[in-house]
Length: 177
Ligand SMILES: NC(=O)c1ccc[n+]([C@@H]2O[C@H](COP(=O)([O-])OP(=O)(O)OC[C@H]3O[C@@H](n4cnc5c(N)ncnc54)[C@H](OP(=O)(O)O)[C@@H]3O)[C@@H](O)[C@H]2O)c1
Image (cartoon, rainbow, N blue to C red; front, side):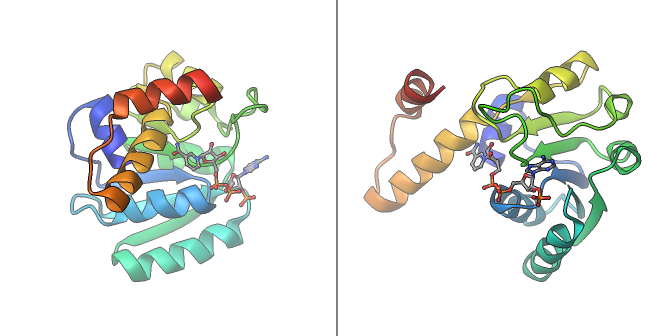
């Protein structure tokens, strides 16, 4: 996710406080990646099932040594944490095909132009959540690059060779999206 974000958004410095929507498998990978970056002091996880987020936060605090906070996926909580971050990563499955109209934004007014959204959803390439952020002046990027780069990383670990990520991306777009 971080390689993807760096490539599409440019620059490599993350905000001290990052926000992650969702607490499932994708969230675990994202919270770990964010929490192991030096410039990140704190990650807040917002999730529908708060207990699941709490369990993840406990694990990730132990592994990363960073403060991992938890909040419910509610409008007030979104307003509070979005006001205090520069990066929101969506790891919920809301918006993923075929539920393309679903999106985990409960407070559109909470979105401001100093936010960057990374939506891990890759099908469709542009999600409704991305459109909501863009409408509020916030740059928004989709999950296709993350999908490709994690596949490329696995390929390199298995074979020792660098795969052509542009060809991989073309194939994903042609076959699956
Ligand atoms: N780009 C990539 O390479 C990549 C890789 C993996 C996954 N992903 C994306 O990540 C998504 C999640 O994958 P996962 O493996 O983490 O799935 P998961 O473990 O099933 O987690 C799903 C998450 O979505 C939340 N959620 C589901 N339905 C919801 C609803 N109606 N309202 C609010 N929250 C809801 C769940 O909340 P609860 O805990 O409350 O159920 C949970 O936090 C995938 O659909 C895909 O879009 C992308």
